[in-house]
Amino acid sequence: MHRKILIFGVIFVIALATIPLLVHDTFYLRVITEAIMWIGLAITWDVIAGYTGYLNFGHGAFFGIGAYTTAILMMRAHWPFGLALIAGGLASGLTAAFIGAPTLRLRGAYFAIATWALARALQQLALVLNFTGGPDGMRLPPFLNPEFFFYAMLTVVVITFAGLWILLEFAPFGLKLKAIREDEAGAMALGLNPTSLKIQSFVLSALPTGIIGGVYAYWITYIDPASVLGDLVTDQAVVMAVFGGLGTLVGPAIGAVLLFAFKTYFWAYLSDYQVLYLIILGAVIALSVVFLPDGLWGTILKYKSSKSPMPLRNDTGETK
Image (tube, rainbow, N blue to C red; front, top):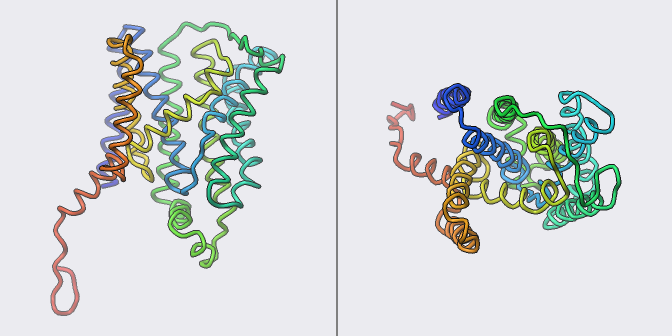
């Protein structure tokens, strides 16, 4: 299965990379760039929630930290975009380590509440600080090159996906996180350090999210507390990951593409029925939780597993 996913992934990335050569319409290129961004946000949220089992209701905070750090360093300190982008990712990772150190020692809903409070606190802080632009936000110098931002977003998300796939699906680190998710006390009894592993997972989730936020800030050229630190970023990432399937990287990516395509179509052709969009989205998620608790990809994997023939064994116990 991993081999097939790898082959399909390489083909998919190559196909995406050729889009700017074939599609010259700025609108469609912008839509595809945003879809790639949501893939990145969904898979990074899944690191702490799907693999470790801790719900993060403040994922958008790291997106906003990366966006504001990149914007402030470019506008106030005149840093080049590349360095400001790296600083934005590091700022998000350090914030995750600072918040995670005390809260990830707790269990239950405490971590979820702490992350939600972090996002709300940062949003209010951005509203009153002068160097963030306050409620008026910040405007970055326009760089009207949609192909540049397409490839920048694609590069960040592909590197993120590949790195996470190796760490979570092949390296022992992923198995340790899954052990914590299934039985934290049992994992501790086996000699693992759950707190340290959870903090590493949290930082691994936050750092690329901050970089994605930095690319978004320069791409959009204008950010404010509501757009990058509001609930929308977290809410959509959660919905996409849950719909696609937690505990996998392919699932959230599929969920991000499908739900973003639905949202784009709805707002393009049925914008007069905004309430209906929220009703349909809520119904889809509710039905998914009830009838597809493992998400789309998890359900597909279970179905394939149930259809695969069991290996036959001879009297000596050897597989035929």
